[in-house]
Length: 367
Image (cartoon, rainbow, N blue to C red; front, side):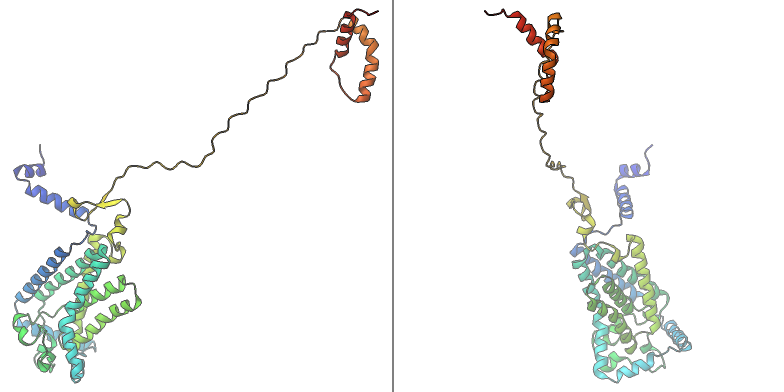
C-alpha cells in the first residue's frame, strides 16, 4: 500500500516535493554559500515588511502614555530616571545635539549594512548565522510594538522633554518632524537602535581581528545608548528590551546552525576542505569529489643480490687398507718418517707411506 508521500506524488507531486525540501532543510542546517542578489532582495523585502507591520500597529495614544508613565515611575523608583537631565544637558550644546540627531537618523542603517557587507565578503561561512540573528532580533521586536505601545519621552505629556529634531530643524529622523505622519510614533519598546547597534558591536567584537576595530565595536552601542537618551527618543529600559530581543536572535541562530557565529568556519574552503567541489545543480552545498586513487610511490629498496656460485667440494680420496707388505714397509719406514714429521711439525695423510711402499714393490730392481 503506498504511503502518504507516494500518494501525494501520484496526485501531483507538489506536496511531496515540498515536503522533501522541508525535511532536507531541517536535516541539513549547515550554512549555505550566500548569493549577492538574493541577499539584497531579502534585506529589502524584509525591511519593507518590518516597516509595514510596525507602522500598521494601531496607535493607542492613551495606552502608550500610560505605559510611558509606568516606565518613568519604575525608573524613578530605582533612582535611575535620568533621561530628562541628559536631554536638557545635551540640548544646550547645539553642534553636539545636531550631530546626535543625524547620528540617530543615519548610522542606524549605515553601520548595520556595513557589517553585513563585511561579513559577506570576508567571512561568508558565518554570514548566514549573522544575518539570521539580525532578522530574528528584528522580527521579535514587532511583538513588543504590537502588545506594548509606548510613548517616547519627547511625546510624554507634561514631562518637559525637548524634541531635538523639531527644535533644531534637522532631517532624516522618521520619529519627528514631517516623517512622523508615516511612522508609528509609539513603537519605542524595544529599541531597535540598541538591538541593531549591539548586534554590530557583538559581531565586530567576536569576528574582527584588529584590536582597535574591536574597541570601536564595543563603543558603538555605548554611544548609541547616549544618543537615544539625549534625543529623548527612548528610555534606558527600552534599550534593555532591545538587548533581550538580541539575545533571542542569537539563541535562535545557535539552535538552527548548532553553533555560534564565531564557531563556524569563516570561509567555505575551510568547511569543505580539500577534495571537494561545488555542484552547480545543488547550489552552494559541498559535494565530495572522487578522484582515481594514485598508488604510492615505491620506496627505494635495493635489488636482491644473486648468491655467489658455490665452489665444488674436493673429491674424497679413498685410501685402501694397507696389506701385509705395506704394514712391513710401514714398520721399517714409519719410525724415521714420524721423527721427520715431528721435527717439521707437519701432518701426513694416514697410509701415505704405505702407498709409497706398494709403489716401490711394484717396480723391478734395476741392475
